[in-house]
Length: 158
Image (cartoon, rainbow, N blue to C red; front, side):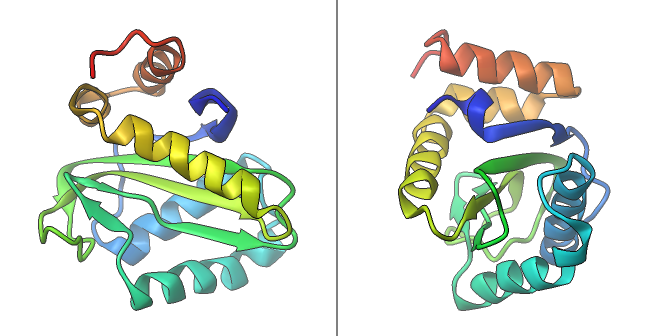
């Protein structure tokens, strides 16, 4: 599974408008809804599930990244939005540092394998210093698209 298969380019926000964790999650979810990846009638339920997951343990894993995620029976395939915050967000991250890059991942509840494969692919790339650095410096959707293409084609240093 490639990053371009996971990430919905219409749900990439190179400069997040929101400044706190819950608002960032809502902003990314709204972009995924706009991109047709989730019916708007499910917004509050899905947002509630994501925020409930966050209340049990932050998905801010350190190194300036967070991967809030949700599984729901009405989600038809794996999809992710990406948001970048130049200022950083308090995501209650494990390392207590600000988060600059957020991946919001949505998966079908009935297919845990696809969720795990998507998480593994995202983690693999976020573990690379070069990927995190280039993502944090991205100023446009096209910058993010080129980064994902480079990652999928093995053109990034480790």
